[in-house]
Amino acid sequence: MYYVYILKSRLDGKFYTGCTNNLQKRLKEHNSRRVKWTSDSGPYDLIFYEAFTNKYDAYLREKWLKTGWGRNHINKMLSNTLKKV
Image 1 (cartoon, rainbow, N blue to C red):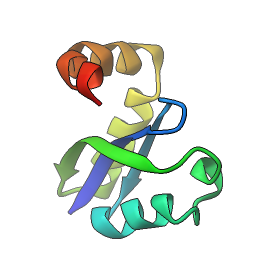
Image 2 (cartoon, one colour):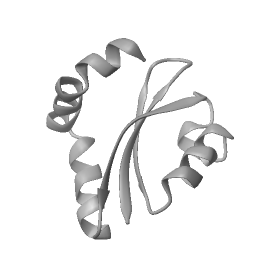
Image 3 (spheres, rainbow, N blue to C red):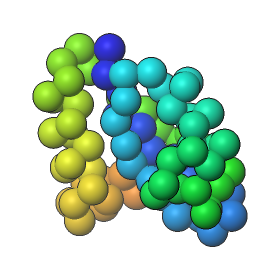
């Protein structure tokens, strides 16, 4: 399985969207500051993920979620979650 995930920083509230085939391991890497792009904004909370059986489909979804349309979709879809976290 391949996972597209969204993390929210507890420090500054910013989002990070990524893709992996091992979600638990990747979250641990983010929170232990072993990922260059997120090393200065952790710790992170996992607020959303989707599972795919095809790697290419997962990466296409990740790419779309990083667009303006994708960010708007996330904000609408997770509006109640984003108020709580």
